[in-house]
Length: 303
Ligand code: FDA
Image (cartoon, rainbow, N blue to C red; front, side, top):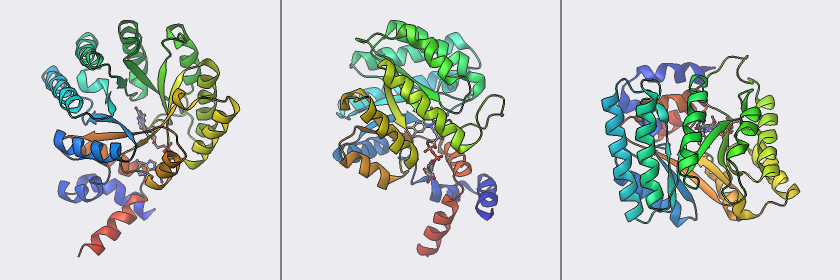
């Protein structure tokens, strides 16, 4: 309860204070910070997906700058030999301002990554963006069948139907590639399942559908029950190791991550960086108010 109150109040406090919490979950502000984090993960046998922080922009000038930043990131990361791909949030390119302009910017980024034989993941944002993001993905997948993937959220009532509806884009030679996560946005009960157990049931249902249909899933969770459920499905469907991967957020659940890596499964970590770390951090904090306790501990220990 107290943690929840502090988590709500923290966004009102000085940025320097919030950084004490954020630094565990963000690679840093610069592309060099991101490269350092990725090299260290790669050295431990972990792949990466790099995300430049920012979302829900106000005007298209920001979208252009964000496009330029991604283009530079891709060159730097490829030349640095990082074993990883990239994630983008469409609202960072003006999805809700000018859908065509947004498509154009993301298309340029996918084309750039495709030039290196690499891959862009389209993050899924709140429920008001889902139809637009499915549409964006459809168009990009038609043009770059090997270089683009999407995120789907198990908490949405619609997700299994969306998966079935996307199967026309799937072939065994060019399989669909989806990151499956629970979903992070606050959504009303008529749109999204609310209870932890309900969301978990649907997560495993969506994952089973993917295994049954040869879709490549990025199993994105830190929930041990879901990791165990996923491992049972992998066994049941005898899924080869190169037909799925686990994914986690930078700085979250390192122990569970190590167990999965040591068992020989592919692991990819989502590495966010950039100047706009404040919004990302405060959302993480609201999601997991228990972190407040560890911040307070680290404050006391650093005295
Ligand atoms: P759950 O929330 O039950 O967490 C299990 C345990 O993990 C918690 O008890 C806690 O200890 C720890 N934990 C989880 N999240 C934590 C956090 N942020 N900080 C500290 N500890 C944490 N969502 C979305 O809507 N669109 C998207 O595109 C993405 N993309 C994405 C990429 C990747 C790689 C991951 C792992 C997650 C996302 N998400 C996302 C977020 C996702 O929807 C979900 O909110 C979080 O992963 C938390 O759900 P878990 O499955 O981890 O379970």
